[in-house]
Length: 65
Image (cartoon, rainbow, N blue to C red):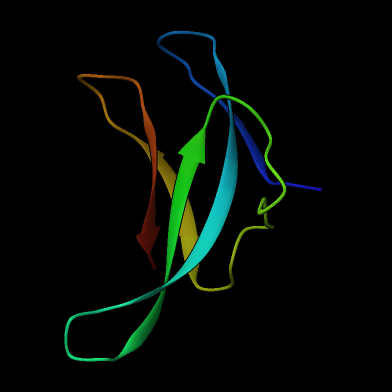
């Protein structure tokens, strides 16, 4: 089950997803993003990260720490 966050500004529910990508130099990296609907690549909150909300747009984002 995906980690969910409800926006304080808009009231929308967002689901956390992850995706493995290959960068230009050939290095592999996992990226995390939020979407309004739950997809097959949904994931739990990774350790060492916390969720914060952009005060201007109300969109959630991950922050290390």
